[in-house]
Amino acid sequence: MKIDNKIEKPFVQPAVFAGVIFIFAGIGILLNGSFIWGIFVELLATLVVFSFSGIEMDTGQNRVRQYYKWWGIFKTGTWKSLHEYIGVTLVPLKKVESMASWSNRITSSSRIEYRVYLVNKVRKPAFAIKTCKTREEAQNSLDEFSIWLKKPVFSVKK
Image 1: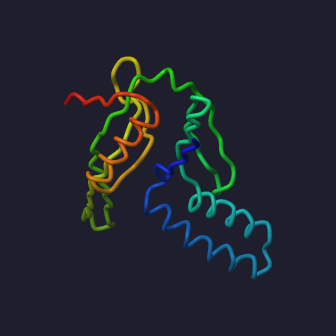
Image 2 (image 1 turned 60 degrees about the vertical axis):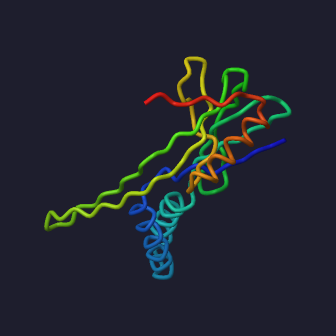
């Protein structure tokens, strides 16, 4: 069975928002006749907007790889054996994003997300294999990965 999960974007939300704005700016530059600058702005903006990281698993061949998908097209990453990992675990993460304005006011937003991790031989989370928004969805995913990979579930020490 092949499993392919998108984990997160390598760029923060304000950068992705700026990338969307620069896509429109690049179109304007192209329409204005400056093709070299327009193509450069478009390539950079689409890199920021469409790139993401993920995990790909092949349970038939017992291998896994972390990858980055640049521009949403090109995957880069190396395969590793699943035998290097002894189990799976669930880790809640609190993600906080802060922005400071020119008047030095700080605006923060936080959210909790749950990630299912592969556990290495030192019993530490190695890397995320699934990102979930709710605890129930994460628990169900943890159970599924434990069954699919035939690996036990570990608890994370705090």
